[in-house]
Length: 105
Image 1: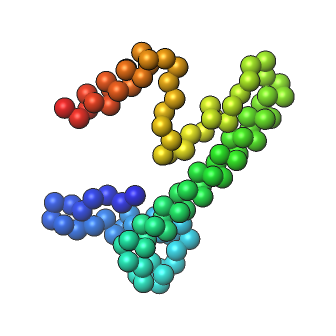
Image 2: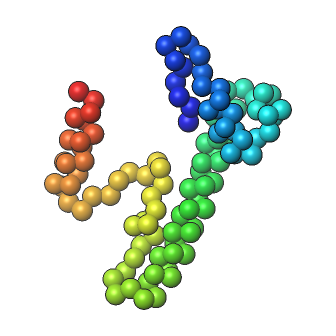
C-alpha cells in the first residue's frame, strides 16, 4: 500500500497520489477520500487486478496445454498476493520458513 510515515510523522503523499491515479481516482476525488476509504478502494482495485490475472493465467494454461506434454495449471503461472505458497515437500517448506525468519532476527 503506502509507505509508513517517516520518522517525522509525514506520509508519502506523492506515492499515495500516484497509486490513486493508477487506480483511476481523480485529484478531486482523492482529496475528498479519507485514508480509510482510499485504502479500501485501492484494496478493491488490487483484488480486481488479481482476478483479471487469474483469468489470464487460466487462459494461458489452457492454450499451453494444447501443445504441452505435461499439464500446466493456472496456479503455476500466477499466484494471488494473499495466497499461501505451495510446497512440494516438507524440506522446501522448512527452507522457506528458515529464509523468512532469518531476516527477522
